[in-house]
Amino acid sequence: MPISPTQTASPEELSALRDAVRAVSQKYGHDYFVTSSGDGSNARAFWGELGSIGALGVAIPEEFGGGGQGLEALAVVAEEIAANGLPMMLIALSPAVCATMLADHGSAAQQQEWLPDLATGEKILAFAITEPDAGSNTHNITTKAVFEDGQWVITGQKYYVSHVDNSDALVVIAQAEGGPDGLPAGPKAFLVPSDAPGLTRTEIPVEITSPESQYSLFFDRVQVAGDAIVGGEKGLGVLFSGLNPERILSAALLNGISRYAIDKAVAYARERSVWGQPIGAHQAIAHPLARAETRLAAARLLTLESARAADRGEPGGVAAAMAKVEASETAAMALDAAIQTHGGNGMAREYGLSTLSGLVRLFRIAPVSTEMMLNHISHKALKLPRSY
Picture 1 (cartoon, rainbow, N blue to C red):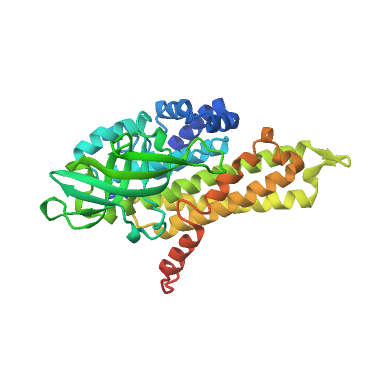
Picture 2: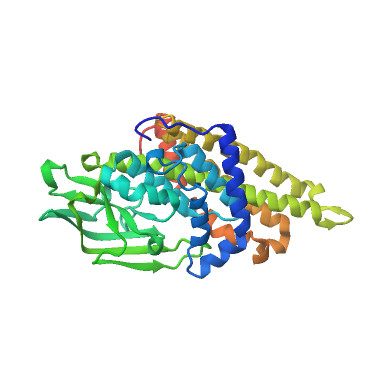
């Protein structure tokens, strides 16, 4: 959560923001999303234009060139780009997770170096935490950062790190050892340049249509400056400050995908005529879409409440977990109903639905699995014993 409450945007400001983001998104559209997923362009033209209208920096403090309007505003951006066929996972990472960590815990120098350019989209940060043997269990992280001769030397491996090829640096979670001035050992966040000597990456082929590629990373005594650590002794507190924004923005993206799928299905159901009437007149078509619309309304409310709780500076882990669970399951339901409504056309690339199947499925696994979200809800909201 933020260290202090954020000045949230007014309804009029949010409406204007939504309109501006929609205009840019419709200029590019889902075909651009699909094309940029295969040509290695990382959708940088679209990203840059979002930055130019101030959409990427809405949650970054004003003193660093952002809008200072909080996660509610950034969630509006995420939902709107997805609702227009451009569900870029990057928005949940660089301007949400990484920017929040820096805004809440970064040094003055780190904030000045990164936040203004994150707000415009000129710089991009990746987030490296998952390891082959340490997925949801952060305490099992084995990547080490050892303090030697005034520098941090990082050794280890990270797994499933998004958009490394499209980033200027990574926020890497590693076990710190031997830090200066009695810095306690344990997990810490480090800023590591993407082109640092000793850092190598290998792309992981995945069945997902997305401009963000996935990578395995190997750190072979990667050296970074002694002041590359973010938040110093705060350790896991730095990491936790980025978790709720990641879940909230993921939920917002998924809500946008649900809107996109339902809108396309409804338009098709009104136009496609069989036996002398539109197929939308048949309950077998109408009811699944109505159920998806109902669940979407609930998911959007959960997402809104979790974003507002974060902007008020309140603990919002349960609300963020609920939003992520409901949004991911709703998106899967909505997309499936939309594909079924289209019949065979639902599998045709030109209709722009099947291209989202892999991404929607991924969000039930990442950034945190549905099962771990339900663990959190059962433990925190229902006071049941922990199993993890």
